[in-house]
Amino acid sequence: MTGQPAACLRVDEIGIALYAPQETRMWWELFRSRMPDRITAVEVRMPGDLVDIACDDREQAAWLHAEFRGRGVPLRSLTVRTAP
Image (cartoon, rainbow, N blue to C red):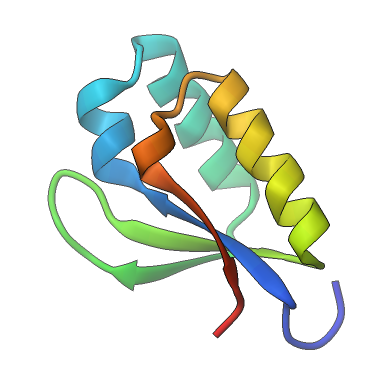
């Protein structure tokens, strides 16, 4: 990824922490630990942050959205956005 991202996937970690299966929570922690350069905290809060995952374009953000849904992340916890 070069320059500013064109799109992002916004993830509400509260939805993962409270409403996702244990396997999904474990997968999210692994994903987050391996992508520190792409994840930005928008709002820090407990029991989970609101974060943006930088994507190269909206197509990649939509793909990531579908991947997260397939892993068990609640739909209300995910939003594809144009990058700020």
